[in-house]
Length: 190
Image (cartoon, rainbow, N blue to C red; front, side, top):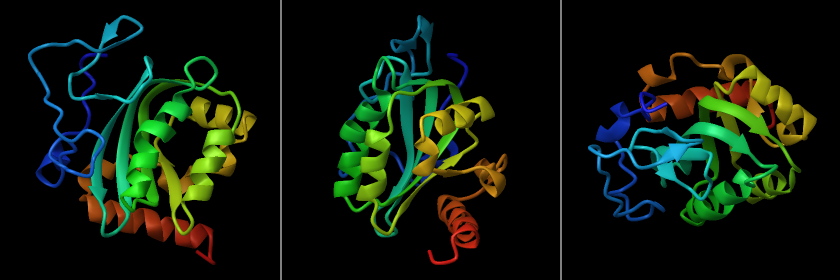
């Protein structure tokens, strides 16, 4: 797992440790020392702890004027034991929402498992968005299948054209435009 890095190519557009409005403002990264791990497997030092032992994130981009953030994930999303959604919601999402973010693009190709519990925090997050949305891109099918079991799919938009193998080739604003276009086709009154 130490070979899986968060996407670094957007660092020229955004860096959460230099963003005064980010929950990671001022964080210093030591790329010479691997100290964080998931189930005993070290992960790249660029991933950020958000309160969970099994799920780490990287805020790849945030634009407060346009009200959107792109967050990449690695690990096991475990709501049943670690209540990962609570940590994500309370430690990251609530902070970003107070800064004006109401559109979230979640990148999940490095999420290796999902264990659900209930949908309360997802529902709360969804209700906090008002005119916004929560989009999940490239989460494995077995994860999205589990979302359906726990009704998480009621609050996240995913699948179809949102499975974007090429999202890394896009600039952040272009990704937002593409996602918005897909959502507008799905939900005409958006």
